[in-house]
Image (cartoon, rainbow, N blue to C red; front, side, top):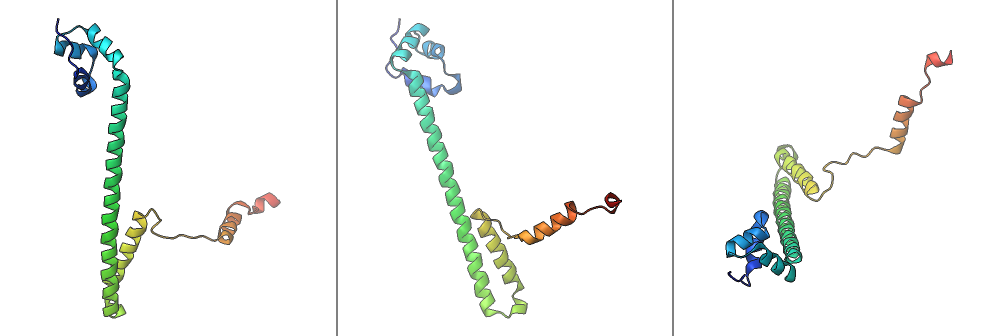
Length: 146
C-alpha cells in the first residue's frame, strides 16, 4: 500500500466543497482509514476552519478597501464639481449662472449622500407637529357634544 505524503492536507484543502477523506484516499491510493488517522493527528478540521476564516477576513478587508477607494474617488469628483461651480459663479452674473448653481446643488447633495447624511434637511418644529396632531386627533366632533 502507498504511504500518504506529507502534503495530503494541501490536496484536502484544495478540493473545496468536494473535499472528503475518501477523495484524498482515492487520489493517493490509500485507505480512508489512513487519511482519517492523519487528519486527526494533524488537526485537519481546525486547520481548515482557521484557513477559511483567514480567507474570509482577507476578502472582507478587500471589500472594505474597495469601498473606501470608491468613496474617496466620488468625494474627489464632487469636490471638483463644487470647485468648478463656485469658480463659474464668481465669473458670471447671477442670472446666467443657473447651470453652475444646479451643479453646485447636485454636488452638495451627492457629498452629503456619500458621507451618509441626508441630502435635504426637513426640519419640523415641535410646535407645528403638536398643532397638526391636535387638529387630527383631539378635535371634538359636533355629534359627540349632543
